Image (cartoon, rainbow, N blue to C red):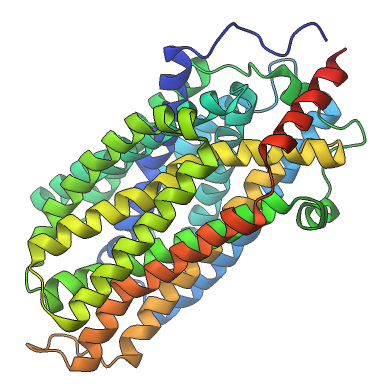
Amino acid sequence: MASTTKSSGLTLKHKVGYAMGDLGGCMTFALMGSMVTRYYTNVLHVNTAVLAVLLFVWNVWDAVNDPLMGILMDKMYAKNHNPKGKFRPWLLRVAPLLCITAIAFWTVPTFFQGTAMLVVLFFCKILYEACYTMFNIPMGSLLGAMANNDGERSALSSARGFGSVIGNVLPMMILPQLLAKYGDTSFAFGAGAAICAVIGFVFCLLHYFWTEERNLAAVEAVGKDGGMKLSDIGVLFTKNRAFIALIIHGICICTQQYVAQTFGSYMYGDVLGDIGIMSVQSSLSMVLNVVVLFLCPMVSKKIGLEKMIRLCLVGAAIIYGGLFVVMSVTTVSALVYMVVTTIASGLSSISIFMQWGLVATVNDYHDYVTGKRAEGTVYGVFNLSRRVGQTIGNSAAVFALGVIGYAAGAATQPASAIAGIKAGCLLIPAIALVGSWVAFRFIWNITPDIRAKMEAKKIAAEK
């Protein structure tokens, strides 16, 4: 092999193009997180018991969807070696399908009633999730095929973070305005979803046209034995310690996120007595995330990506834990709480934004220890771990509300509920962040020496 790269360096166009991927995907996916329950209950009038069953089935589908799509992508490239690349052809195929299924989900079920509506809704959701996964897996895996070193991985991770921030904000600017004007109507939801889907489609196309699979060594080193198999997932856990660390991190960081998010409104509304300040907190958090994403590549270049993540994790854990102790013995204002927790959240978010670069590193390490590339499979299983964390965070928080004695609508909450809310917003996130730090400190094993050996093996393979 004459060269491992297709161009001399990662360009601004590459970075912007990579950011377009998460921006485009989030234009529809963000609605699924923030607005979909209102659509189910206020437009489709789905019975809550039936909805609970549907949500369970959909969550199970989501759990198996990611790794299966990753394996499929690896196997197809191992078999066909598409000259246009391993990941980018999927982006072009799936982008229009993602747009169409997103619009269908928010519109088609409204034309049916009763059981027929539930059946149509069920399959519209399944199809959308399948298309989103078929876009998200190659989009995330593409980072390893674009970057040739840790600096480029950090830069692309930051670019993806920028795209994610914008992609999550825009839909929340578009749909609420339509709902305010037209109310909870099928037209408002359908029109808002269609606008977001079309805008997302354009960004997804830009993601395809402005990216390039530059790291030929990563792309061309796909095994010639048919690619990854379902049974090979076990090899990831037995041969790849760094992958185990990443899995633990994914579960811990998402548990921390979703527990804190679920309890957040109760903290501001029932403990601090100022739920309106949450809108200020969202704006402050977005600004902080932009600053963090700008600084991350420079800091990681100086001290290393893993060390930067570890320092930020332990820093955030200390802030959360310290504030919990303070609030256990005295009161703080909503403003002080907002500022302190936004800083802690910003620090912990660094591990989320930068984890995509670590996924690429884990892929390189897997190739080093097994001789087999597995970008799609690694990314898919890692996404599964994040969904596990999301499920744990959401379910545990909702269950905990009953355990601590929270009284919905009460003017004053019992002491047990106040203490539980503080623990949910501060103590549990601190513990989860420590768990993530432990994974990177004691389980992650890609040391500078191993990195040197990985690089030496790659150079030897090229000769």
